[in-house]
Image (tube, rainbow over the protein chains, first blue to last red):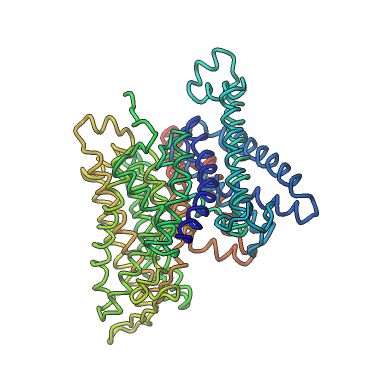
Length: 290
Length: 333
């Protein structure tokens, strides 16, 4: 039974990371209908910036804030410079663009920081909290960070007027423009926020999977699975899906298929959801007006 | 992304001699090539032909049918491993190809069922995941008896039949050429017929196609099946040529290279597959000498360049240039 609780705790912790990345994907999907295949690599690149700052002797909290700010700027820059010029382009072209970004970020990270696998520090103490042994301090801290990120995002989009404007721009760009919202900048801000929370996810998962340029490819896949399971147009679905995928991945990996096939769990989930309930748990079936 | 004109479109206006003479020159070059370059170069050109078949497969689903696949490396791997297993069981190399085609056709249909019933990006997501997962599946311990785990399987090199004055490399090149040409011809006929036109209709306007009574899910699945079979045969030929299959040669990078290949060569173009194959065979070799990560960087930059400057790929640019010359000639007359 002990092993079960270990795995459950580990699953919830990595599920939080998947939830954040899935939420970043869903945010961009909701506002533009794009699936950002480069989301993982952008997060990986930001995590390298954190590693570099920490190695230069910057204290972890400052490095953390600096990295989030960098990731935000990176997201805005990518939207402005690369995605925006292709706003009217067909789906095929945008997918090719995201694949190009994925390749560029991956190789630039490899070129700047080499392909050697690096250890990434955890900001949390080494001993498990509260005198128990089921859940490590890093896992506990990751769950805490996830909850804080989700709460901040929720309050931002629910209670601030900027958040409201961003939601409006995503939902109905034409009407938003008529009431004076700068839709273009709202999209760019959305990219910034998605990239920033992706960086947080990267910094939380890096101590566990170690830092290398390909660190996020598996994580991105789990996030796809989470987004599809929850419904690719539902932020709540992405969060629930993320935690479910994290838990399932660990339990199925431990008890049924073995850890070597953990990634396949995500593939089976994606295929299964698409067969049984393509809209996902919380998504609405897509209706297209002809 | 701009598509190259369909094989039959636009040619009537141009002088009909140019494409034919280009094809004849290409055929002569392809046949003479193995007798003028050294064995290593022959091996490289064999791989060019192999990639051309794979890209042709990807072009069917992505270029002609308009459905994005980011995981054709997995079908390539399935073809390669099927070939390796059958050859391991004592089957002659040439006989494995139809089996590889059937296995990959089945796998393609299996992926199509969940992913292609739906509109949108689901195929891209599902195939990307397949590409990420596949090396892990191949390394799985329980399959190790067949797949050789992470060590892979070594294949024996086919030898030129006795009585032919050919080296093994020359023989293999000609064998791959003898497979590639009929496959390109079949693809061309398929695309000119009602199936190809149906695929293009689905790409151009899925709703209109459905309104005209086309069962879009059926035709999309058929397309992915055939596409996977093409790429699977390419995988088998690739395995025979390299004489070795291992999980790490079939990662995401391979699948994304195929995408780069069709973007560079030209979407929805048979000739584009050959151009793209030359690109993905020779560019990494050039750039590898510079930096370890260079192929990815070059691919990324090249993709952005083609998106903005040459959305029809090399073949699209040639077509545009040809019609430009043509128009000027007509104006001058």
